[in-house]
Length: 500
Ligand code: NAD
Image (cartoon, rainbow, N blue to C red; front, side, top):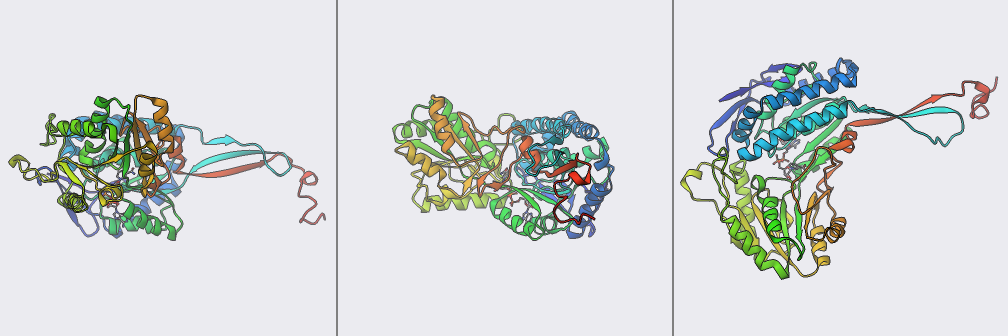
């Protein structure tokens, strides 16, 4: 069993009340780690450290190149410790080893990219002042200050990197609160950050519960910006608390993404793609393709092929390279998924495959749910409207493409979407009409740290990644430098100031 302390002000410390909690392996329910639990006072301590590190330096006085080098060193260390991090991610989050390998690789790659963003110029000349008078004008992008980053459990290391990378690249200091369900790899990241020599207080990592550590971060007046990833319900709460001190706020929330297959799609590709879109990481992805919209003409054939393939999906030990799907994160999450499956049946949808907890003895201790496909789904049913966050696909039949686009957009969410067709132009025309932050054509799940990611509607506020994402971590200053110099030549000379 591993043990972790809070990382505050460059030190690994116990929580004030010496409180701890256990992180559980969702495959076998064994304790993976005993972790110090941050309460309200620990959170305040972490915020004070981040505030001091921002206000007094040395971090904020370092050159961009120095900051960039530290961020790059984190990327290198993640690469060096790849195998160990993969293993911990599997044990702590129930991720399959195949996914964990991708996640660790992509975390290192993202950190490397953010190190390059850190070295970018932050001063640009601007023209076109409306008032007369000679001057030089600049747009200066500056760090916002102290960033509170709050993350979920589905991609623990990647999420931590996706928050820390841009926040640090923009020159901020950070308090990161990992999910109470998956603190382990974030705490390993704390060790890496410590080892590469970040000044004390620049990064603080404090596992804790949402209602105390989380809310304190959002309420604390010394925090300047909240960067939250999690459910829409908690996102609403975070935004309302952040409003009290008018904090800048980016929210990456839930989704109910529509996956539209056109009748000219390459069926081999689209069937596999639709399965990947929904069942990757047991459906616990915000951008998962949870609503599959099939045209009448190919509906039955498509469905039969999907069922045939779903029968072959291997549920098992996530550490086994042959396992396709592992357990859900917790018993509570499994209960939630089963309640949705029940509601689908009650509202008249048909279980085409799955729908239960697998009975295989070797899966008994894990929080497994069978990959489940519902047919006869109406877009107004609960299973088509609400985020289930489990391996449950709702298949909806459509007659015309206009009807499909209408149903895709008839959702409070707008995170992802997809179109499958052999005709790229036709697919593009559909993609443009989808009200969603990311739309894939003949693809799914491919998110890049270089391209903006985020939600329309109640899927979120703001964007992550790329230069656009970096800007969410900056304030913009207009710097005006006078070039007139002589009092009498000032355009305002004749206005309010007495001449003598
Ligand atoms: P959650 O909303 O329950 O929790 C997310 C984080 O917020 C956790 O760290 C939690 O401790 C914290 N939290 C909970 N209550 C809080 C409060 N009152 N104040 C402050 N913080 C609080 O979400 P989850 O169950 O951990 O993750 C699943 C959800 O995350 C899904 O809805 C999924 O769609 C969403 N998600 C979104 C994205 C995205 O980029 N849009 C990515 C991954 C996950």
